[in-house]
Length: 457
Image (cartoon, rainbow, N blue to C red; front, side, top):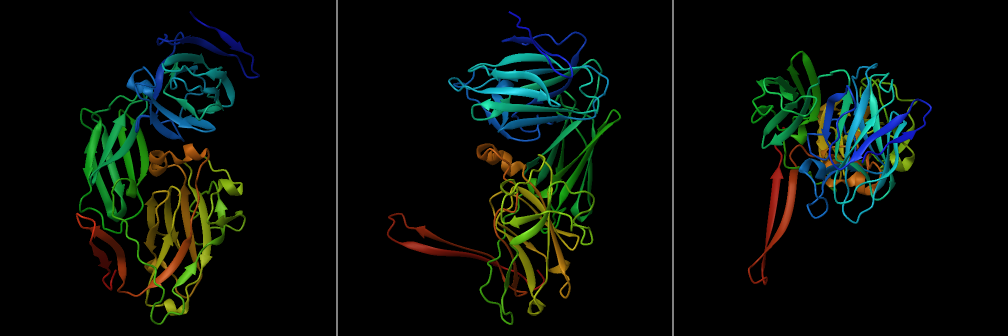
């Protein structure tokens, strides 16, 4: 049976062409030009927020690609850019949800309603084709919004964008394999792209090149090529058939480095007070422009925000996958001269970069974990110092924890204390104590693990 539904819109009519259990033929003259296997890591290039989930066989009887879903609340967002403005477009969408778990949602494309409240099929996957109105991509972009009506989250399994005009594209994703960065290059339909040239650059003058093999991947061994204190992003560029794509990936998302948390001292010889609380009022910009982290960049017109705290809870909205900007100034006490100075962030959700006086001093990925940054060499001891932090709510840590999905809002922000502190040139870098119980649980051995710095650290 073919169900036909017409919805009157100010822009045009959007028609539900088919709603069957089997995949239907594309609209006449249209062919797939983009594909997202939503919920599959590295195979959903156009999904911009939310978490990943895989339904079990007990929940949904379907292929693996249908059982993996991207989800978010109150809306799951997708973004397509670089589209031909005058071409025709349609969507093919695969929906499913768990047995005995009702879920209703709507779909909008560039704020035009594609379908009204739809009860997602329970326990099975079904394919729906929708033709989009003429001129939908007049600005070269299409933004999809899957909006929750009832249930836990909005979600989708697979999405194809179809058009009457071929629009080839390269996609790339970067994953970690030990100390290797693995770059996967695919075409517009998520098929492997062998023979693509891949260039990787990063801190410490890192510059590597490779060509993708049959499965569309290129691997880069980073062992011994970066200093222990290297921070920032890896820039990855892939080229093939006249097409080029570039991505920036936080270094900490590729190379795991054991966290080092310097014990904050209660006293330092010759120092009246070794800590300075950097909480309170900061300047905030949800969409900063230019090199806003530079010390002379203007911020007087930026609104104020309280730290610690989430930006959503203070009335700010930040677009998904956008780095919001925090800035504040501080001065160093005169008796800190000759000591090492560090900043402790008790938590930043979920990834960030840190600058002091325009110098990148560190980066971190992990929404609920504390970290230290040594800022000594970037300081102006006798002048005003400018601290700038770029914070992105979405990231690998957020995806793996599904934190924003469960909280039903983005958790971005400097969410716990920020402390500046001084230590002697030779100090404890790491201190950990544990008790190892005997087999009969009658005795215990106290084990202390400590690491000290060298005076030059």
